[in-house]
Length: 471
Length: 56
Image (cartoon, rainbow over all chains, first blue to last red):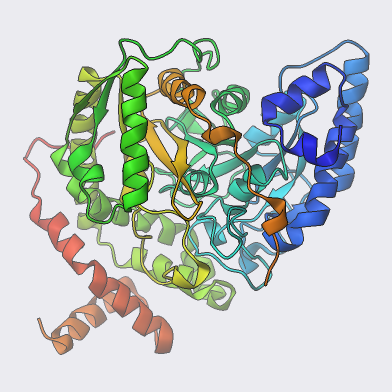
């Protein structure tokens, strides 16, 4: 199997090829390493490529397969991790000079779970500084280029995770999401991205940004691949108290069951009628909701008035960011990029009373939305406000990126939210819808997402490597 | 609110927070803080009912 043919497969395709002997884990790993070598000079998806370690893992996976042991669908499959997820003995920078020489001595919980599932880790992926910076094409930690147009950013902060999956530089990746950092890059790179229920996946060994908002989750080419990755990483971890009530389901069992009889609530006022919504994103999303209707779902408009305060509530959480960074901000401010440094300082200006007001309104918003989710099975809306921006158009110093209302609400509420590609703009840039579900009901939103995916061709399209050149 | 009043209010908040910034860091944070003021005012204006508690 040629390098390009293998790297064009989705995760399940790679898994099947290894399982049926069409390729081996070593051959698959070598194919990805060749592709990284050829294209990552432009795409900048990786901060660290772990070639020797990956090949050793692949040889071990192949040896187990030859002995008749297959651990599951991730056995021998080459994946990659955002560079804030610890791999013991491998530098972990979080995209910042502050951690430029940091080498953790223990794996993150999710790394241990992927290892137990037999996965191969190709390397550590680029990201916005501390998951809260802005795109960068220069300096020691560039944040990646969008494979659909290398003059544009892939969004962030899990930028490398989105780029690597979309460009076929790994079969699947993990990112993290505090206000949209999985879902933003997934939407702009034309892939699937899941921020699962808060407390379903451990953050132990993951560099934090904001404890009450941080999630770690999968980014893949298809919904099934996301379900497979989630299955591997979900579950209780005594090292992360947020997971003490985690309820794990079988995420692939009902994927193909369709949406007949499923009730969807469209958050039209807050998301579709928002003046900031790009016209191409809007029309593609509305067409996607029509398709879900044709597939048998019923769709009604719903609303939650406190959504209007979500951005203000989210900003009060910057207190958590400042608390995490205040000593290093004091001792080595020069090691932070300017935009992040300023945003972190904003957290110092949030009063305790404002923080508690935010928490009370956050609880109100949660009650309103959970009430909606008693009437409908899931909420749907456009996945983002606009397609990928040109690097020169990205504001560097705003507190939160424009359009973050499409994602950050769902971090505040800790509800599962999945991004599914739903087409392309007239300029050929990916667009997506988002589906939000009840706590720990990832199986339902993945089933809805898969039903839409199955009815449409968007997940089969690949960006053209011939365009991955800098002019 | 005129700019001088805003600056005085911002400087007071910086002092309360124990931040001593100058130059570009000061200017950028002031711009960011001023841009966010309407949202903060909206947050403060949305008075919860007495029995509205934060989640545990």
